[in-house]
Length: 138
Length: 71
Image 1: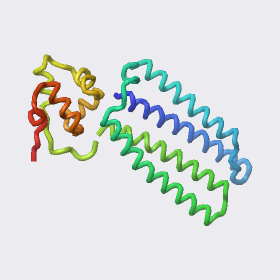
Image 2: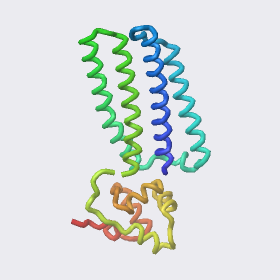
Image 3: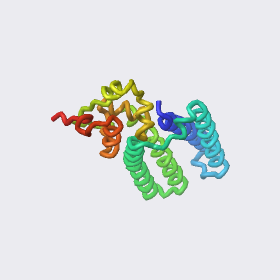
Image 4: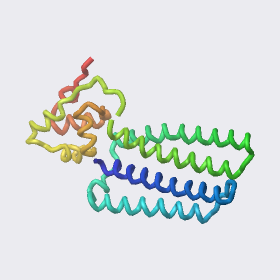
């Protein structure tokens, strides 16, 4: 498996775990409060730290297992894979943003707007890494 | 990656003719990963013109001796 495919797996797992943690915390906090809680900085900081720790630790491990691959430059096929994955995932992010804006117009909740935009970014970024894996394998 | 191109190639055959050059060694010589060399050999990826020339020059043959249009 190429180094950058392993990297995409790590980032996918980190984003999925991080996203699951974040939205589980938001949903459980909201059900306890009896309504949608406002976005808070400590939760975002915890999410970011989790993401950085998983990504960094994962990359250190795969780089130690294959240092030569880790240092090799991106080749032409990989460049195409990254461009295609970024292209398709950008549609997903755009769709998420449009839906978020629609929800805001209908409901007028700024908190919900924050969460849906944040979720769109997470989903779009995860989709980008998953598409990279798919394109590596096809 | 995507639709298979109508191009066949003799990369694997030429590698074997040149002392069993490995996919990794070929990749390193022309600036590709081993997985990209595998993708080229399996016709899953058509290399750029520059890479096609690099492969041909490495094996000391013409580009059309390496890549064959199949339609």
